[in-house]
Amino acid sequence: MLQQQTLREPVQCSGAGLHSGNRVNLTILPAPPRAGIRFRRVDLADKPEIEATPASVMETNRSTTLARGNVKVHTVEHVLSALYGMGIDNAVIELDANEPPILDGSAREFSRLLKAGGMESQPEPREYYHLSSPLHFESGETSMSVFPHDRLKISCLSSDQRNRFTQYYSIEISPDSWEREIAPARTFCFFEEIEALIRNGLIKGGSLENAVIIRDDAVLTTEPLRFNEEFVRHKILDIVGDLSLLGHPLCGHVIAVKPNHSANCELTRQILEQVRRPLITAQAFAPPPSPPPSAAASLTSPVQDGAVLDITQLMRILPHRYPFLMVDRILLIEGNRIVGRKNVTFNEPYFQGHFPVYPIMPGVLQLEAIAQVAGVLLLRQAENLGKLAFFMSAENVKWRKPVHPGDTLLIEIELLKARGKIGRAKGTCRVDDEVVSEAEVTFMMGEPPA
Image (cartoon, rainbow, N blue to C red; front, side):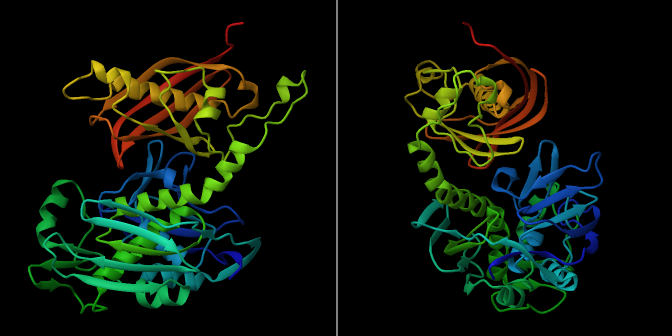
């Protein structure tokens, strides 16, 4: 299948969200080529949209949550898995609540909907992501690897912490194999987890109608298990949904041991970083263009969609220098969103006094990192090239967890407003998918001193 695909006709369904319990109506609409997959909250003013990309991932506790500013969509993995598995490249998912319906706990109903709507080939060619080398990482008992392959293959081992119901399954993903072998696998939960989930405000819409419950050696369900390996097949369903955030089909063999949404999304980020690396190298070694000497107003900003900026390029944009440059690399620029990275090491000078026996990155420096990355985003406008972003104010500042040497700080920014010289943005700092700090910052563009 070489061409991009969308739906021929819109499709609809209704139900309750698994975690929120909210009643929701969902509509999947056709979208033009290269539009990708995006969620649209039609219950909110201006019908805000959230792109299904790694940069939109906000939470990965028991499900994958996407966000744009204060707008969120929870538990997106099943509908995304259906779109990827059925070969849909471009679609808009409209919801009138904050979570797609859980339906029967699998993706089977979503696949039936998509078949009913029909597939339509589009004129744009489909782009596949190919790995140049293997990737691997471990987190606790979870291990994730991916190797070059000529199509998407997933091999997965699943069990709980006590190694109950250990299951293994391996499959090459195609629309036929996904619909037949993966889509019907239902979500599941261990009985002893239920109390904690309810205490944390989750599974408000859960029941034996949409989940399988495991209690000791017994399986509680309203119908027999659909597969002998239904639990690990559902883990593969989740992996496909989280991998769909790449925005392009992956050619690779994923080997997952005790996966979870946090690990799935981290693997997705690492794959995206690798496939974009040749572009980064090309940008680093390409000679800069020579603009006409009197054409300053027509200069093109290096802060463009798809651009990745290394430290050398950042130092051409930002005036900050050691020891106050709080971002090492820009990983992603998409529209009004930008993601930066700061590697926190024990060599940071502030650790000499904060605190020598228990080193913690000062919260105000995390706030400064947010301001610096937000300032970079405003420079995407050509009229701001060569100007400085002056920090004016910070609101709704929250520091949630300490940041230590060895942590990698991911700084995610969404530009909320840019009018004239004034910009306002929401920033979030994360370590290992956990929010460590957040703030809304306002800054003003000004001329540097002569």
